[in-house]
Amino acid sequence: MNKKVYIVLAICVISSVVTVCAPFFGMESITPAALIEGESQIKMDIFWKIRVPRVVSAYIAGAALALGGMAFQAMFRNPLATPFTLGVSSGAAFGASLYTLFGATFVLLGVTGQSLSAFVWALASIMIVYGLTRARKGFSTATMLIAGVAVNFLFSSMILFMQYISDFDNSFRIIRWMMGGFALTGYGAVKSVLPFVLPGILLVFLFADELNLLVLGEETALSRGVDVKRTRKILFFATSLMTGGIVAAFGPIGFVGMMAPHICRMMVGPNHRYLTPVTLMFGGMFLVVCDTFARILIAPAEIPVGVLTALLGGPFFLWLLMAGFSETGPGGRRRRSAGVKK
Image 1 (cartoon, rainbow, N blue to C red):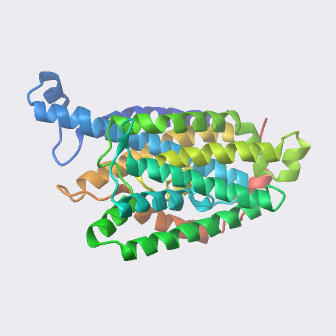
Image 2: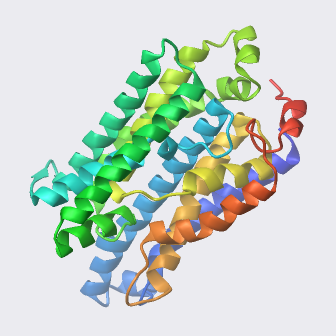
Image 3: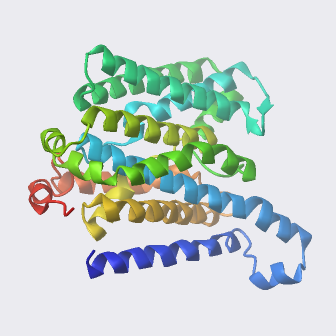
C-alpha cells in the first residue's frame, strides 16, 4: 500500500467521524451546548428522534449503494453498471406503487406495508432477471444486462399505467416515493435494512481479490482459479438484496452507485482491496452531505435527496461519457495495463 492510499483512507475515516456533526444542521441549528444543558425538550426530540436516525440511515444507504455499484462495475466490466441497471429499483417502485394504488395500510414488525411490498417486488425483479439469464443456459454478463434492462422497462411501464389510473392523491404519493428520501425514517428503518446491508458489505469485502481478477476479464479470472459463475451469482444476489432493502426503505436514490466508485477509483486506483473500504466510507459521507443540503437549501421545505443526487448525476454522467471510458471500466486500456498487485 503506497502513501497516497494511506492518506486517502485516513481522510475518509476522519471525514466519516465528522459526519456525526450533520444532525446539528437543519432549518434551525442545534448546538451541542443545548443538548448538554437540555434547554429544550423539543430540540432534544428533534435531534435524537429525527435527525440522528436520518443521518445514520443516509450513511448506511450511501455506503450500500456505492458498494453495490462498485461490485457491479467490476463484475460487468462496465462503468455505468449498478444494481439499478438490473431492475431492482423499478421492481421496488412497482411494489410501492401497487401498495399505494390499493390503499392498504398495515405495519409488520415495525416495517410499513409499503416498504414490505417494495422489497417483495425488488426480490421478484432479481429472481426474474436471474431466471431469464439461466434460461439462456449460462450466466453471461451480456444476457444479464439485457434481461435487467428489459425488466426495468417492463416495471417502469406498469408504474406509468398505475399513475395514470390513480387519483390525484395516490399519484402524488407514488411520484413522491420515487424521488427517494429520509424524511420519515426512524430507528426502525435502520434496523430493517441492516439484515440485508451487513451480509452484502461483508461478502463484497471477502470477494475483493476476485473482483480484481474479474475486472481483467473472465478468461484471466478463470486462469487464476476463480469460479467465475459462482462468484458472480453470490455477488449478484448479495448486492441486489442489499440494494433492494435500501430502495424498499428509502425509495430509489439514483446515481450514488455510479458516481462514488469512479471518484474513489481516481483517488486510490483500481485495486479493490483498497477501493472497497474507501468506496464504503465515501458513499456514506456523500449521501449524508447531499441529505444535509437537501434539508437546508430551501428550508423550511426540503428537496427529496433523490432529486439532488440526480441533479449531480446528470453532469457526472456526461463527464463520464466525454472522458471516453471504455466498457472495460475507467481508464480503458490504462486500467488493463496497470495490473493489480497481489
